[in-house]
Length: 321
Image 1 (tube, rainbow, N blue to C red):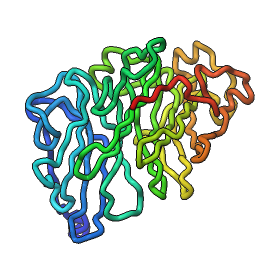
Image 2: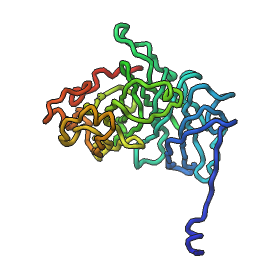
Image 3: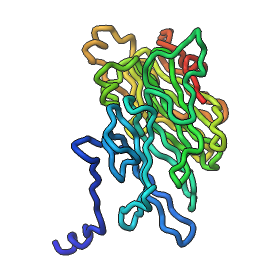
Image 4: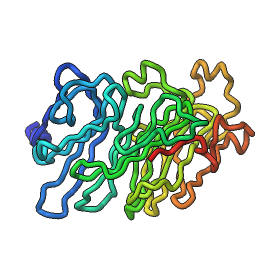
């Protein structure tokens, strides 16, 4: 009807394409409201091999994958300026993926926000060689959390890696007072060639959930925890994390193991055939201590976790500065 047509009237729409035939993967959208007469900001993010004005700097497509963060005018979706898009990249032949954006909620005029993703190498300002020579990292992904100004300049960047495993940054959430920020993600078995080329996560074989908390002012790590069972545990799409009014983290995801309820021992044949269906879980993580409910697998089943779980999880995760 005519009334429906009026309700659905389009104010504006735009399409952005990298140069050539390169693909692009959109991942996150953030609206920053102004507290003055200046225009609000619309920030989009994603990853691509391609180049173009809306996808940051670059003269030619990269062989790996780069993330991008682009700032637009919400009234028209035009770029704010010629410098309103940046690449999030390490090396041209490596995979760097932007997964999510977040900011402190319910405040006007913020001049900073946070970028989460994962990389195969070291982003600017991060020294991944600052690790123990007796416990070196194997090639794989490291999660990253970046504090970025609205001028699209990184303020600090932190990476989180593991021994012979991929750590995938998926989401973030800022405490209501703005003093701390959480990174959420998964840790999983080392990636294969196909996934390292695409820079995308497909199945989640051998995965656990991770959550880490940092000071927003300095990026100082407060704690990092690994949560999981002997089966696959992963986060919901979009990062699976928010915060309550006190700043405790709330996680949502799926588990094929006895995380919240005892499901019995899953046989190897069931694992192989993927017959053990997933449960949805929702879990809080203490802002003060990082404590969370001990997986039921350990309480009832007496099953030793695949790695370090529960209140002592995360010892084999490594922080880079």
